[in-house]
Image (cartoon, one colour):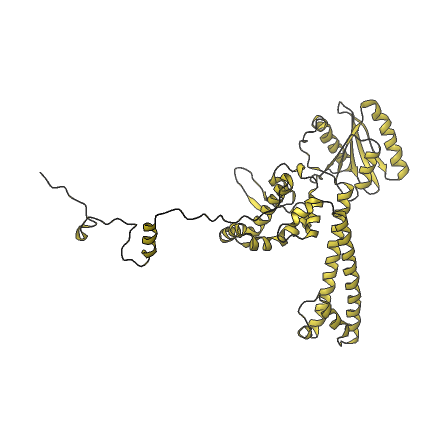
Length: 396
């Protein structure tokens, strides 16, 4: 088995190739030109055929896609995508490739046995379908942001002339407001800018609708989307985005793993017996955290158990920490929904029926509220003047 480490850049890749004994047998820089890349991988495939194939390790970056496809095309047995390590004082492409090669060779047995590698923050690469859904979700989020900027520009012009109070509705997204905006009298320059913003607004509305329709088409047969969308506050679009980020739920062994994947667990810096707990790590997808954040208000309003739990933490730790706690709990609930194939259900307090009692006791209870007596306390046999004093035994 051969072990290939790649430090990828836009114009070239730096490779570090080791044999089964861990010796470096090839290290060089190769241009990303199609002819040179194909020539290198063809020679590697021929060489690896005599040693039962090869593994590869590469750091994640924004243009990994073509390289991973190329590795699959030339028969790579195992592709390990990892998070980049920390910076070093002696950072070079050759040193980075050499470090990756050492990591891959040290974990060769664990990778061959399907075990978790040591010292590697491995990334599970998304499938083509999941990648397209993620790209569509990111594109939709970008369009919504651009549309919000356009609306804020229009608001600024109206506030400039103190005309916001003249609008027929308070909501800017209604057709009635848009028609009024098209006909309202403004100075020449402001009128030109408003007209340009309105055209952009219509374009973004159409593009957002097209992106949402495409997302809906790709998730029609996905049953997991309907289960997550049953949670209050999570729309169908939010459920689609969340499912595309999770992928196969079985790769998360525990609910805490899913919460950590979305950056909802606190960071820490413990050393010398001192424990320092910080804020949440904010790792993973910010769009997924935004979906959970939107769902918090709806869940604590409709689920009484969650509302009571949120109120308890809010009183003790504050509103922000309570909100994050609900988001993490929602991630835990989603893990159980997807892992064990169960629907989301509200948990209401169970009202127990009254205990069976005699007619006499029930009649007595009805008058206890207005009676002068207190049946729950036994009458004291000690005289009133002697109460509070220690009794003294009489001498014989």
